[in-house]
Amino acid sequence: MKIMFCHDTSEVAQKALDQALEYFSCQKPEVILVTVIEDPLDASLVNEEIYDRLTKEIREKQHKIAEEISSKGFEVDALIATGDPRSMIMEAVEKTSPDVVVIGKRGSGSVKEIVLGSVSAYVIRHLSVPVMVMPV
Image 1 (spheres, helix red, strand yellow):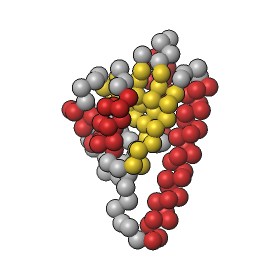
Image 2: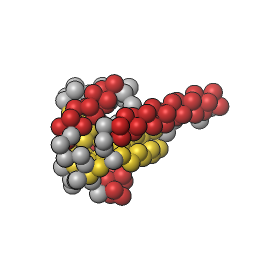
Image 3: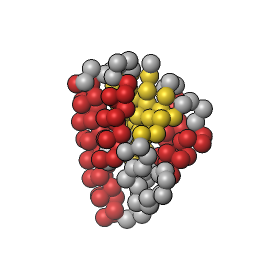
Image 4: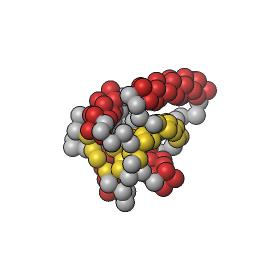
């Protein structure tokens, strides 16, 4: 079994990941950890430096998360994509063919949705594989 977990390195995503790993622990599936770094909206030099620093921090966080998953006995493949999270998740699913996609109810986006985050709502509507939304 292969599960893809969408993780934006937020606390909400980490709680959702912990719940999902506990849920799937007896099956010990291969875990595909996907983190999407959104493109910066402003291309000024100062913002590029901030973006580069944040990108480095996200990569380091994802690496630590992947190590934690591995230490729990799961095989893990960590992927980082840059662009629109909805599109990048769709591409990752096409390339890796997971059996199920797991995503947190809401991530760390700047605009919070009332019921579901915009990315999780999009993924539910557009993926052809089962999607498990963790209700953190």
